[in-house]
Length: 299
Image (cartoon, rainbow, N blue to C red; front, side, top):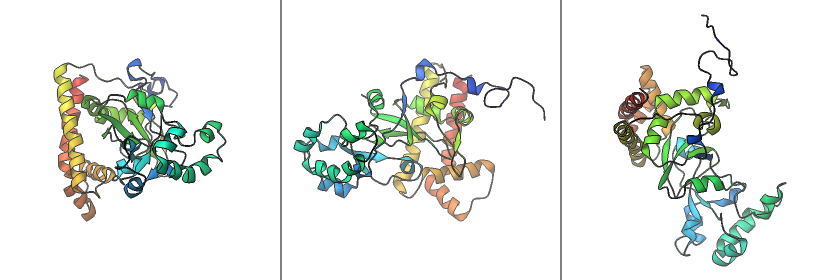
């Protein structure tokens, strides 16, 4: 076949995807999660209790649920993370002595070897605590997250208490309207075209600068907005409900089966089990309904 036209920077003809510019409406809303630079920050629920969680007042603000890409794509491990952003070292030592000793023995030795002076000097704080992300999320009850490198481009709501890992791209929006548009086929196709690919599996990468910031949300009326919002809430609730009922049920497994359903392929016994646990036929209908609402909003 032949195509005629201007060849753009990404070696395609047609829409100048590579030339898309960031929009003011999208700036300052998306950010990767925190980068720990010290595995000692991560604790189990039992370890957290031994450090004083539930016993020492105020510690619940600094030992928080933690999610990484695997937690989103598969199922949450139940990990917690010690987040002392905003605290001086003397405050930590006086208010949370068990936590101070834990990090002194498990994080400081690693940080002492780091070439960056800021990492060495503030060893009790994450290497990248993401000040901009924290400011953007102030006052929100939840936010939108997606795994940076993943086979399926899936967006989910996370509660404000959950601290996201560096391998999650997070969007400071609590409105399900935004979740709905991002979860639609319109945005998924856009993200596949603008993002790169990585790893052995050649999985798509969600680059916030290329995939989110230049992406135009639809300018639609309140009726259309409300419909997208309603259908996105149903989608998010369905996945969370089925995963709560079946803790071994991962989103990747569910979307693998959804992909097979759409292709008309026969499901294996294992895939049939995922289909039944995840109610994947319902998941498919929820996505189709959401797509129809988003397509209409774009005209």
